[in-house]
Amino acid sequence: MEKSTVSTAEAALLLGVSEQVVRQQIKNDALTGVEMHGGCWRIPRSSLRPIGDVERLENRPTPPYVLRLVERLDSYDSGMIPCADAAKIAGVGVKAMRNGLRSGRIPGGRLVGGCWLVTVADLGRWLGVSGAGA
Image 1 (tube, one colour):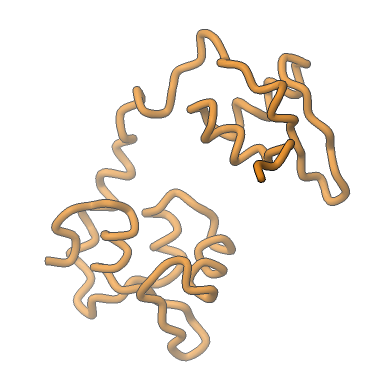
Image 2 (cartoon, rainbow, N blue to C red):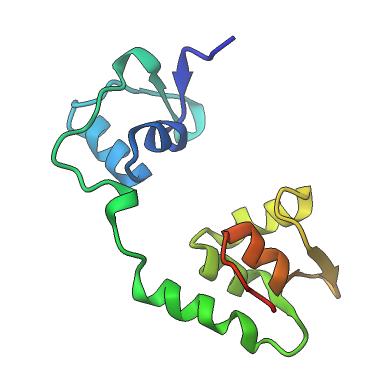
């Protein structure tokens, strides 16, 4: 059974835009959303309509800083990347990366001396970068 509401992340994925665009559309009353306890938003599926004149994520070039960070994947001698660096490369927050490693959603995570590390090869595969760590 399909949910009748979606999160801002799910709405962004369905609409092909960023979460920031979805939140801006809610703020401008162009998209209906209900703020829940804790500040998260739920958006009725019925209110999801294509957002006009917004640059789609798939049409955007990869930012240069991401390309530079991905090129650095092979520069790690140990084959392991600290969680904070992996989060920068993936474009996510450190907490999200740490939770993904802890839960196993992001493969290759190891807890070493109280610090989460991820293998270069596994991070590359998770990001869809061919040849990472090779």
